[in-house]
Length: 381
Image (cartoon, rainbow, N blue to C red):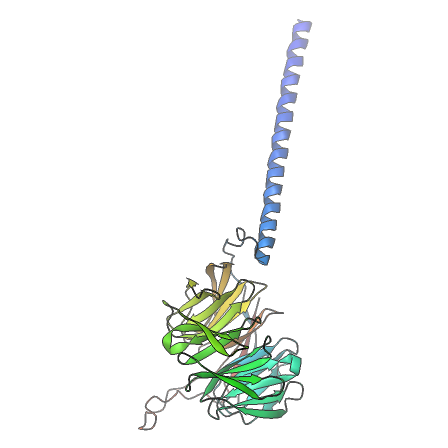
């Protein structure tokens, strides 16, 4: 009996030992598998950020986390259009009818103004020349000013109703989009001299430069995108943007060669900058007038004035984009600027009362701006 009992317990011990070893092996295998999967996921995400893989990036991220950080009351008179941020100095340039207000966003104090910019629409910055440029719609001119002192140092004649304005670091030129004369004026950023005029297909709205010799601009009344050679000053391609209608704002992911156009029919057209193909049309809010792109976060933004929202779109892959947020902003906040260093988004708006009665000279009068209600809104994560 002792021998049988010893054999029995010895066999049982062996069996239990084998089971335990099997369980440990299985646990090690599972742990290694999960670790390998985690490392693979990390590697794929890193590769996606550099454009060499997209499998991890194809997963739609969660909410962006954007919310109102600060509201800076500015008051004053005058409607507004585009705004521009200088990330190096943290100065925000704000068009205000007949002048440009320059705000130090961190202190909330006004650094100065650029005067006599009649009907100003946009502001372009050329830091390498210490120059800034404004497009003066009613005057039909471009004002050149010193970025440090804000003193006006020159003026150039543009076309009729210059609207958006952009600096191209490749050609060292500034381009003003002339809405009524349907052309673009090219200006040497160093000298402020006009170097040429480029006829375009219709009413040019916003434009972006890729830094490699190409300028892209929205043709609002034709719902098209045009590509311009910034050195030869010739249109090199024209692409229809259907189903996008009346594109206004425009931004670019230079690394992945994708354009983001804000369309009047509540969509963002994502466009291949080499073929002109519309590859995605994520839904945005109503009344968009500006777009921006953050290369680090892979976010495209649309500021929607009528719906009072900031739509945040994630570029999952170059050909797939997903809406992750519609952040409440404020009515009429239709233009914006992005600081790519801090990822902060700046918007401006004001309160409005009822529109005055129509007259023979003005059949569609604008609503009246409530006095001293103009504000700067700063959004961040």
